[in-house]
Image (cartoon, rainbow, N blue to C red; front, top):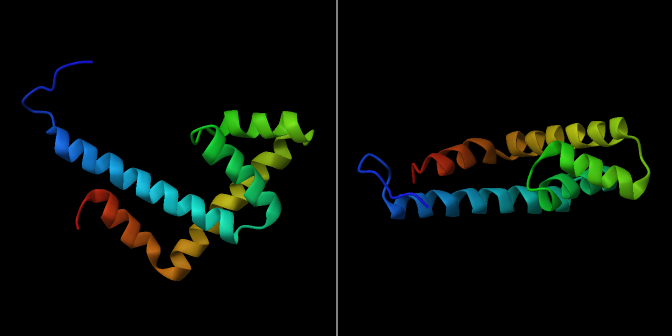
Amino acid sequence: ERMLEPEDEDNGSVQDRAERVYKVARFIMKLGMKYLPPKQRKVFFSVWCRSGGKLNEGVMEISRKTGQCHWTNYNNYKKAMVSIRNILVKTGYGPFLVSYMKGEF
């Protein structure tokens, strides 16, 4: 672990940003698990929750378990992301989440 340089952010702001990232990711995960259709929910859970957000790992993992082709899973993941974006736009939460991540409030 390296020492913080003077130009680095202090430990408090780094922890604050990490907490904001955690809260936003958790909110999006809950949103997806509640409102996405079953096929999209399944691949969304695989990618976001099991693989740490890495698309290839999550899609490949669910493919081995379900026997579905990678293309089907990729399409379901893409549809899930579009659905979540549409939900955020429709409800107005999108700009709020961006402002929160920037630490504006």
